[in-house]
Image 1 (cartoon, rainbow, N blue to C red):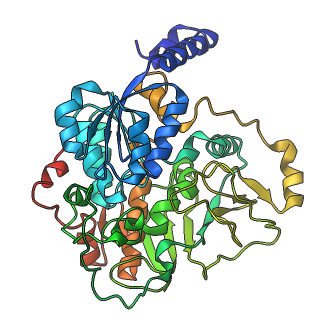
Image 2 (cartoon, one colour):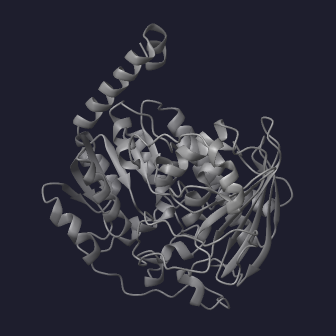
Image 3 (tube, helix red, strand yellow):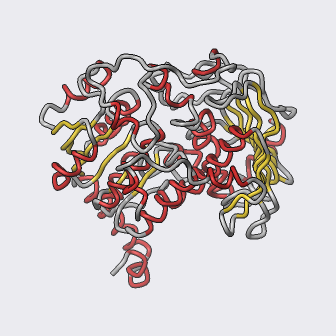
Length: 462
């Protein structure tokens, strides 16, 4: 009998007790896990999983085994089997683990996740879920075919205060009739000092001795190794990453997208761009995403601002831009304080909300309006588990993941459309029923991305 049907047969108290028992059981059962990508961000999420006390580490995989940034985790788990190629890990140790956690560059999320699902493994993968529209579509289909497998995308805010607050405020009618959202990420990026007169990709350099470059490239057409692609630099390039939008978008717009049921936009327009070139992301950009009316909610525009010189308009009474202390550091160092920290401004018919990124909660602005509304605000439930616990509990059948592929995949597709508008420096019209771009044949072909390299096409088969 399923949990849903069990609820029909028992009282709410008994059902809650049954859920608590399931959660306790889920916490006591360790999940056998393999980690793919164990340096930098990979090291951070491995430590987060370790803090749950709910994992048994079976295998470690990284194309750069032996490099300085992977040695710490290798030393911490000396009994775990070691691999440089994730395909060999599944072949030789696939029977030893039940779940994988993936913290590799954006372009490699897709093939690893597809193989994991096909192998019957639960999957935790860092955001963005995929680099292209088609890859996200295939991953959502693959996950739907395997409802017994837990999937979770690493936008941690889905297990923190903002997620539960947004839902509670919507249910209570505080957030309603939203017509516009401003999303902003105006911090410095790696590519901001690069020369936009670029006319070719960087030349080849000597490979580091421990690096399996061919596996690192995955399905992407061959590029000669250059340090400007490696160790986080991949995020700068259209061929490998998704720029500021793919990096921060999910942390800023995830709850807006899910709870306002936005789905896919009908228009994506590049309204401003500084530093456009064919290879890496612009210094700054303003992207307009237009969403239609849905389920009684009015049409909604999201305007995305990135770049040091491209701050959004700020409403009266905005106050100070706070930085959430829970934002994880990266191998770029901690997020620097800035004039306007990453976040969002939500405009509804009656109220304006100010929010940050990740799990940061919303506040009503200006302050006088917030005081007026204080007595009407509902109690916000606390999260029963953090993002990593939520995934592991779902692996054990005790919870459902809050950011599964089926939910996050659509948001990933929204961002892929935004990246295409950046790359082509244009306006795109999109038909969400046919999932086709209707005004630009080149852009429509780009939904699928370039054909995969020989030997990598098998990952594109469901």
